Image (cartoon, rainbow, N blue to C red; front, side):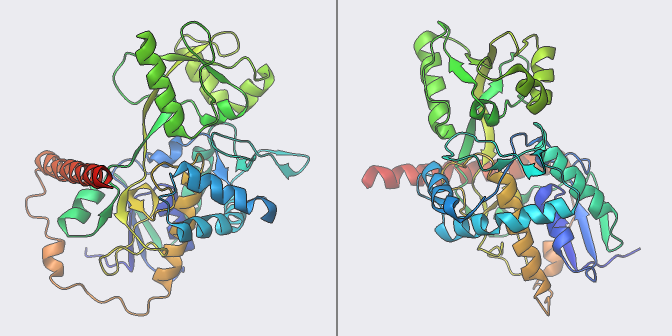
Length: 384
């Protein structure tokens, strides 16, 4: 039976779910996911979510974000994100999200390149806590239909339809993932571990860098040390952190390390940098509008310029939620959604039964775009 929807949200991570919750209840919404509904990367976020604690921290928070992004950030986007953070946290708490507290007050931790403690957290599974609670609330809504295991390739589809992309060669490398020789996704050891005092050591046991510098700086220092000493990894020493803090604040990290044969209470843990986050994506304005009429992009697939060249730790969840809500507000303000010209051509699914070859074709498109952006950027910097 044919179904009609006012809004279709592609992706059920934190951004997509929060957008659905922020839309009016009289809008009929379809949310689709390429995996299980709880299979998004938002569930994997460990460290936490930033919040502007008070006005006295605004300038330093703004500067920390800009400095980490090599001052290539869009200043307006940074200001919007920071100024919106307190309301976003109130929204999350209203949806049942729980953050660590003591005596009824929020606990804040610190991560690399932050000048102050401004990160709220839920043990070391903050992304899971936020996204699972948002998913539960969305599942309660009568106006939202959830559809899992529906394949999408957002960037390639955008490129195919001449939707502007931006900074596709800006990929963040996280300094500390658990070293393994096995193939597959690396297990990330949150930056908040270093924020609480853990230090990096080389094969001789020497501390060789300031662990709380921006991620790209720390990753470069690790790679340089590995090359210098001919090693496959460096070591992360948890010993400066009280044992009770390790067990209570980082239970998931502790469990994974022990399963891999390393007890953070007594052992140094081998770590290596790994690809982590995509600062680029589909170009959007401050209200998450793309260059295609009535098409919005939020979350990691979008590029609103808030992160610049390198993301500041724990800004990702906040950025996703802030600009998802702005997208929802802008959508709700639209009185007329006009049917796109050549709509049938846009949604033509003939031949989509051969998904493997289509996926390979789209992958090649995106890789080509990334290489082109990197080449043009290198040429521009060489002549600057």
